[in-house]
Length: 478
Ligand code: ADP
Ligand code: MG
Image (cartoon, rainbow, N blue to C red; front, top):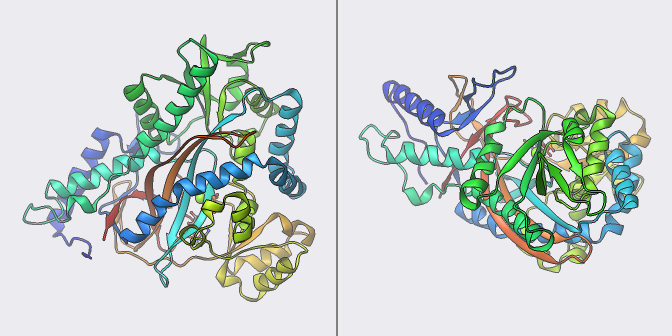
């Protein structure tokens, strides 16, 4: 395995100059806070790819379709899932509870489209003792960075091939060792499958994909990469609308339940939003989710698919018997070996044990509520005082997860023109796409869809790229 390149000060400044202009020219960009539409920034990136063991990378790709099947099966066995979600709703009535009651209302009104699209991402860290990938979480809604991941891989390959990683001008890495993620295309392929299915079943019209986005989206170019891939490769256009806006802008045919936007029939509603309670700050937003859920359009994700990504479900799946029950194929050594211990904090025997651990050995754990999108977890020594600050009856809404200890790499982060040299720890994400029938469990399409490496300074607990803790990175496979 090669160490990171070492460059003279002059060569490093030149590298930064070339990196910056290549990235701006090719759309490796993100809006800063309080942006003007014409003023994006270079996305935070590492200067170099980060080393990753090929065996673990290959494993992560291999198990992607098995994770897809597993979550597809859970959704298709709605009864089991809904019992758990119902219990969780009590602890998180503002969000999980609202998603659940909105789903119940949708069922009551009728959900005319049983076919559902999942664009998933399974996130891993490399444990520094076993040197094996361990799952951080499985995301079922609004997974991001599929677009920018392709671009950062292309950037690092370009810098390498252009000789900017050496003083001699020769490539530093073998190009085969720098895999470029095909995730921008992979996610677009998933959407294409859903559009094609819808058009074959329901219409002669040319349909569109409706991206439901957050207001003032800073990560718009990541989304655009998927949108443009879908258009350029398949001729499928997309339109963008925010969640509260959508209600007034869409039309639903009361008989066919077909969804229209700007006069075009919508085959797929693709949420790049709608995963956090702050997004539903008005009743219109919940109403809108309900309206969209009860149309004929294929949802990515449906409320049930979104709910299957609850951290509680991840905790229950660390029991191999539960995995076997839903998907015997998934219950294999490779997939199961990615699980660390996750405990409930409820009245069960395991819950009682976990409560003891939380107070006696908090430095080994992270406490997670049923939330997505970063900034919600409680780490290590903060756990006991946090738990004491809320009634014990509410603890069951959280899971207690063993901390994964990844190695620190000496990569450099470039953010807002500044180099951060504190060492990085990295999180691998593997995308997967699944088109399936929620009622019958029939799988119409199941594929791995590229990867993502995000890195963050070793000192920060969380790694949000947009939040300013992390950056996009790529892999040097060894
Ligand atoms: P969210 O749904 O908010 O993204 P995550 O479960 O992904 O929540 O946690 C956020 C971040 O916290 C992760 O990206 C990772 O950096 C860190 N983290 C979460 N779980 C663990 C863990 N078990 N060990 C080490 N770090 C973790
Ligand atoms: Mg996460």
